[in-house]
Image (tube, helix red, strand yellow):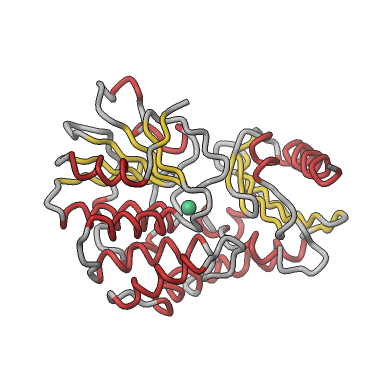
Length: 321
Ligand SMILES: [Mn+2]
């Protein structure tokens, strides 16, 4: 277990180092990409040299973010401070997170997941923040620099995607205040919503049709699964499946939604969502994953039917408590 830093200590850590490595997590979402790039641009404004990376494929959805083309797979080189964004466990960063190569350099995780394991040597974790981007927004304010449009669009993307457009239970007055300031700095909520939620390929719509048609309501659990066969037939890669789970939970009698997606390597990518009053983070943690009370996930062994049985049993056990 690592050290928890205060806000001031974390800001000071950034100030004290000139060459900084910033990593987004694998299976990247708008929050890790937006907060990693937003932090990168803010640090550069402070005169720092920053290398930014994601050790996984980044969806072209995020092409509109300044610095998108810099997000190639990298491991730390001669940087003096290593920063890891929005990940609750070490395996979320691929080869970028390797304690054997820290060589005494400070390594900091910035995160907001309730299941964060405080695994890094240094950690700034605010579990009440609706997104990691909201935390970075506070860092940038403390740096005393002005928000420009580049930083604003990156951070607003993180805030909007993690709150599903200010609709999750994690959204607070602080979230809206940050969003307001970022909009004043040139970010546009409608433009980012258009990029993030309203630009899906037709194949993704076809996939939704099939998944929703086959979704099964088991008590208060609405679950669905997506096989490799289905993905191939419809012509969607793994990226076309995000968003499906949130729509499942819009069904009035559903309290918990689960989507199981079979990956090319046979592993099962589990997504969980729940209404307020039902906590899926513990379910995900027991299955080896993590996340938030209302949104969590895990990577399971296949095949699909066995994974589904495990997941439903864990959810039912948790509902019975
Ligand atoms: Mn996040």
